[in-house]
Length: 377
Ligand SMILES: Cc1ncc(COP(=O)(O)O)c(C=O)c1O
Picture 1 (spheres, helix red, strand yellow):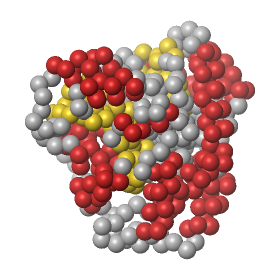
Picture 2: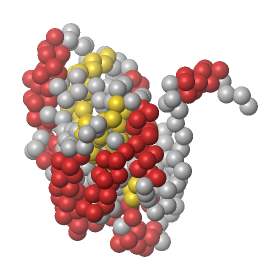
Picture 3: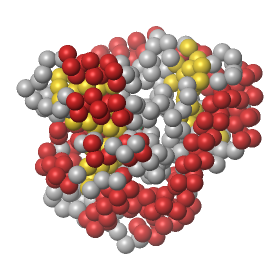
Picture 4: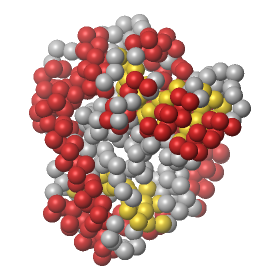
């Protein structure tokens, strides 16, 4: 079958710009400095054994939309209660992925007569969900609460509601949104705030995320948590009040018209939250300290521009896509699992290596990495 012409054209344009992507080859034995398994939960033997034991008596699949039949309802309800408690909220709803959680939450709430203010660096799942909602979008400069306040002030009022949507820790730049100022500006204009905690969950605020860390949970309509990063499993969780959960059960089309999450995902997340209570705080603290310490080494390497990490993402800006890919290839050859990030994932001129700081990577590993990078850069 030939590819439809428009898809072929877009691929050709990517190829011409040197930006064609392919799935990476497996790199057995390479040191993982790229995954979002910040706390080592994805490979945690204790968690794996507990999950295997718990699954022995549960069905493999949910068998239908949860509104029709949930074959593992006790397990899924228990996971949602555990996650809500972990995130410091009354209730919440589980989705198969963070992408679907954003789609499910944002399309359920936002309507075409609403106005939404969205950070310029928000994740693709937020952007696509906002597009799908049909709400009028205003993109504010990244992390700029003063600009947000001005736009809230000057943009003609919608007939519907106002919303502000931001990540807390940004996935590509690793920095923290000015949450207190954002919430303050939103409240001054009657706007609801939604925060995506994908890269803060498990690391900040005793695992609950950055909103909880600064005591704002009850001034934020909902937070979105991914289960596939620090919690090491998969899935997306909307943490909110019971009323909003009940609304989502009715209004969230990706929830209503989709098979319920795999029981293993729900059980895995409940067990990950329990595992966090045993080892999470200590591992998170070690990761955050390592991130700060390694940033100060990276900042001294000529030819690279390290961005200061507010959690566990350490971006090293290196300019052109070619340079990012060459540096990544050199590091891979030296035994590190590292990837270059290029447009359209990051803005033009900001191609980078995006390192993740993971529990268990030793100071010796880091210093070997910097030695190789100094030579290559
Ligand atoms: C900020 C943010 N939100 C949502 C997602 C999507 O989560 P998931 O991978 O679980 O679909 C990601 C990345 O994967 C992300 O970085």
